[in-house]
Length: 295
Image 1 (tube, rainbow, N blue to C red):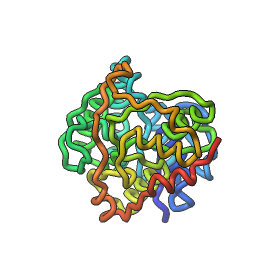
Image 2 (tube, rainbow, N blue to C red):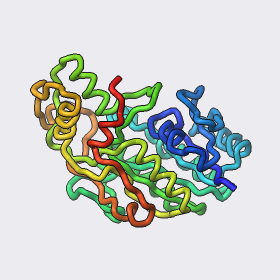
Image 3 (cartoon, one colour):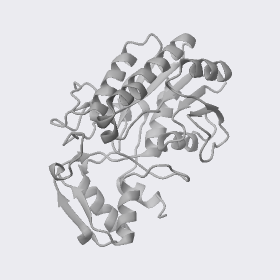
């Protein structure tokens, strides 16, 4: 019998990628705050406000999940810095409600976390590295992780880095789509050269989560792309791939941007544990650029 997986935040890029990556392996229930967006790929859909224990109870009673992939979160880092109470509600309190619902039915919780729990002084990071967040967003994810680790249901934490990709009807851009759009319009863009990341294709992250569910793997896993580079180098490669004019790029450092939230300078992940335990095999940036459509 197929495992039954409930996905929170199903209208976002990861949620949509999970629906596309599933390919009939699991019975899926997609959930979100409002109406379903995009192609459900045969999944059921339930409206679920992650801040409502009653919504969890209703959705869990209707679908009876074996696994819950909790991807819903407030992830816009500067918005979190400016609205810390809302960030805590959506990222910490909502996770506590999700944990309680999973504990009530014994479901395996897979919690999506971030490289922003680290301060960026010692990347690339392994799963054992201690958290030291620099921002409200990073702290909220570190606090939620602590709740997950104390849960009495089976649990996994899937951390990721700088998610990129495209699905039809995408409600929010990401660095690849932003850079392509700016180049296509001939706009000058300021790109930081003092932040290092491991860009992660949303479909690879989705596949990593499904592998965790399939194998019943518990604990912490780092799921990112296999290459680590500066944001500037990443955008340079976007320009080269599209045949755009890279002279439109202005190299800057993070202090010139005036962003409310601090970003960790050097993160990136050591993904050997996920490769060994899960068979995780993420695509290179070149492969990802080849498959993300030009829109």
